[in-house]
Image (cartoon, rainbow, N blue to C red; front, side, top):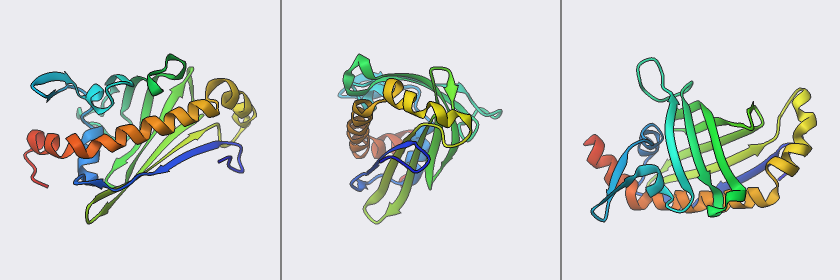
Length: 190
């Protein structure tokens, strides 16, 4: 939908992610680096999350104590829909990461403040209600003037649809690997 301030909003309310808690999701977004064992094969955990689209994830900046949270930065490379036309190669700054959700701001073509990713996590009896929103365009100031250009040349409607599909696919995989990985690596039986 187009918001009153000129930004585009793409949003998803996923089906309940069964057996996955908000605590597991916070842990996951704080531990994107490394490998996992899948079918007796060691593979990059970010690629395991979406084998066709994900290429790389690493932490470009951690907090002073080495942890991941607001102020940390993540480097992400992926191809939405496994399509080079929808390449993502960004460093994104974490604004929020807690059991209520995750907000980060990707840098796009060297510009910060024109894309925002918002995730909300709500614990329910079967697992977690997970909602996503991708905002494209600047909300205030002179940068609002470039929203039509960003939305036409940087992130058009087809790109938005590719993001929606990508997100549905990756979030749909959480219940198949995250509970076991979380228990194995943390020892927490939650």
